[in-house]
Length: 153
Image (cartoon, rainbow, N blue to C red):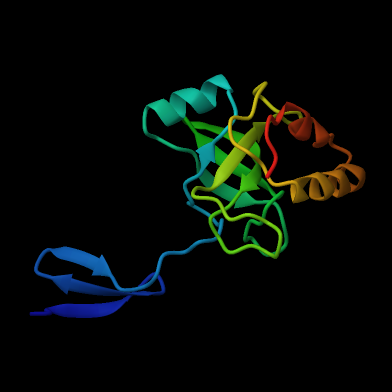
């Protein structure tokens, strides 16, 4: 028997005694507090993923606040703030862009160079054109991410 129902954070929340469950569908876009998966071989990324504490998105660096492929994000990982580039997403993509099983992230430093030396998962080929455009407009060299990738889809 339902004892209490109300709106909580934009989704319908229903109380069944002491347990709460949500009746809204899951959000498949990158926004604040979204858990991500580090796919490079950086030390901080490997430790966080091994401990089962994946990084969470704090901020998306674009006008809409919703992350797309190739966008720069600020993440909280192991109690530190780091920047990263989104290289694969769960959400439905444009045509010829593959949809991944997890939200993949490559950590970068302040100058835009990747922290790790290798990317373990395939990255989409459309990322080449996206990152080259951002390299010319922003000044940071994001093409090094393409150089350390081993596979393209």
